[in-house]
Image 1 (cartoon, rainbow, N blue to C red):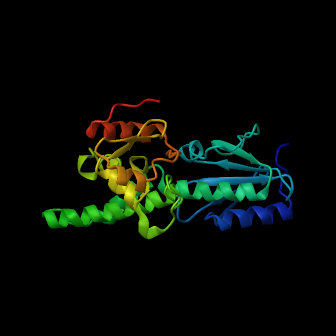
Image 2: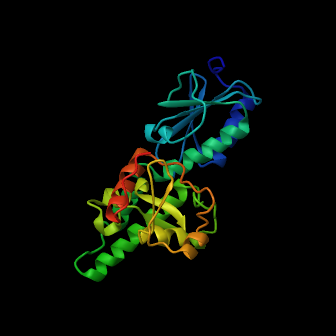
Image 3: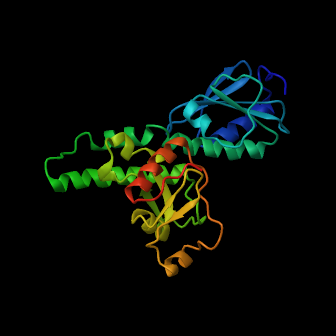
Length: 260
């Protein structure tokens, strides 16, 4: 793809505006050398979109490096964009899919949940145990919402999307975290269906660095069957920070360390 047309044509601008607006970036901030800049009122950071025509290809440049790193298997562009990471798409639909992912990551990375927690508890007392429990519940609700965004409202093991059956599982438990930053870090959490959450929280299962399930000898055959461990089950989408926290979980429950 050649460098973006400056200024972008009417149809390209219209489609870019729709794509950005439909995925949470509703504030247009002008044009930069053919790139249309957009921001959001609900997440930090800017994005830039450019296109040769409505048939593609399309370009997306992202201003936040931590979001760009976790986009996944999307083609990087050879064209330098205004942002830190720039991606290229053959179709408008592919651009939409990635914009939706960018918005979800922007809701949860890296310090957005922590900042929300600090703002929410700024004037809340913590003198008594009851007051500290209220603060903890506020933090856990924020953490859950961040995990719902990060994992797309889906258990990565079962594919379950029923909100009532999903649990925000801390890898390093809340009480054992050295800081609020770790307590609210989405890389210290998994969005698991209720049965998997219970097994993980009790130390009956854990995960290796490659996402494969590690099973405790204490897990019953009936529970293993209910977890469908006779089928291939693997946790995808782990970052290095997830792996560091999972190493602590394995150590806590006496699992053999895994670096596969």
